[in-house]
Image 1 (cartoon, rainbow, N blue to C red):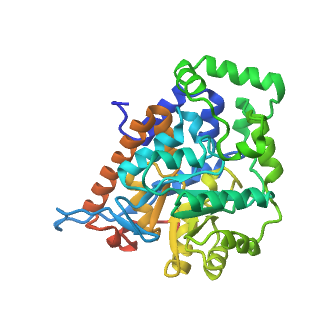
Image 2: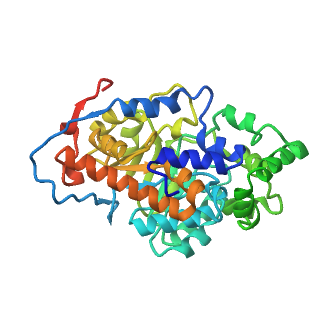
Image 3: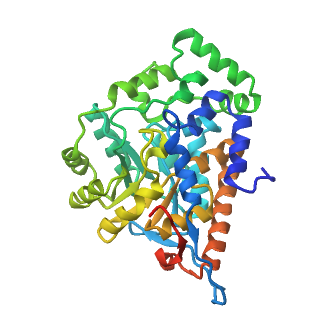
Length: 385
């Protein structure tokens, strides 16, 4: 970990330490992974405008999102089963986020349940929820999120059906049911002793977090994925937001917006924020990168709600790029899971320090001493706008 200088260094550590079925799950995308690659390559094409001889001795990367001041314009995005990448992983990541003064968003399908993670930190969590068939389960989760003081609800809407992820089939996470699948994953864990000792043995009980009550004694990965497939709701529509609002009265953030018309609809229905996102390239392959989708969406609704973005972010420089394109905050996804797998809580803490240091340099060299000063004027070239 001492040699890690970037999020990509943590990716390599994660690749070495994790069983293939877990690494490919967090690293991969859907189908041929065209959108996954576009998220990164299009972001790299965004050139910032370097300015000089401006007083940048006082750099302030803090920002206010949804009524709360935070140290950086980032949050840790919800990642399913992230807690399997390190011992009680979501707890470690939440502690790192709290220490850095940024929000941590817990996934509905986390390995650690909401109560465990909320007990571990004083700062309020964000909580992520899917629209699923079992509305009673949703209602109970929303009630628990309120009771545990969660400060925002991230409602993911781009998963009425799961994307097809070839890597999961090849690695043995999916498509290998029964004894054969269990033996394959067991062997992968056995050949990665650091993970087996830290997570496989000392990280138990996993219990599959928030969905454990509905799974009962069926606590295997196959049971979990079968429950998810059976509870994705392809009938979901904008009218279903009424159900969410009926049971949640805090800030509501709609995640998975990639089209200007959908962003306008979210604003008209009273969402407090949106996340411009293609699910990290894990759903519909071939759709635009976040970078392509963000500017027209920010132009259309940026004065009506808070616009967040994710996808392809590997550095503080990438954070500055998305802010310049119209985002008011950025969700870090794979970056924090790589760091968690590579170094646990200390790894996530270090990754956030790297992001902050890189962001501060970008702000200084673009003559933007505050987050509010980052805008389209900071762009030197963006050929795909």
